[in-house]
Length: 266
Ligand code: NI
Image (cartoon, rainbow, N blue to C red):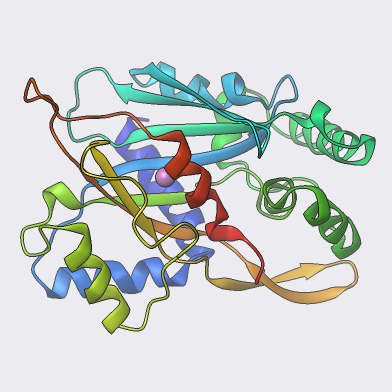
């Protein structure tokens, strides 16, 4: 499998949880655009076997190299980003992990259970990234209790291993040449953008500006019944060149911190 085949497979699992992403693709295609992804993001717990390093195995084998490390102190997350060694159009990969030992015993035990049940069903850490949720049936009570401590922990418990978001690379669009113009187009089409910390995260001086939709509400079956909860979101990124004319490929922790909130329950 090459990286593009993997991304197609990941897109399928992702867009099921984010029907809005299909619509945005269609709308942009009708405007004559072809879409390049800036990055694809994944979440996990830092339990050995399913942690950031394990999740990155498949990407490293497909030619991705670690390029940045990020710490989110308030949300108790660590993250790394990876870039493909030769394919300049390949999306960057952004993987974060929740530091579960900094939460209650309940969060830590739930994460361990998720890890054990996942590792019992996969034969290789390369399968992890699209293994979805192997700890069915899930409980709404556990989801709600996780939410009290960490929105991230709760999202991961329900949705598991799939792309959390894809990101449209605005630099490669022809008609929408700025994040402002893309945002107003999407709002006119009825999409709601995440406005935590303002609709646009980051500045031109930081060399990266990002925005995102709020996650679509999706129907999820729990032991206790069916509930509507936030699924995945779609992100948009515009990058700028530094003083040496090099395009910035990193991430801004303070901006990503707010983007994480796109899956907050409302
Ligand atoms: Ni992102």
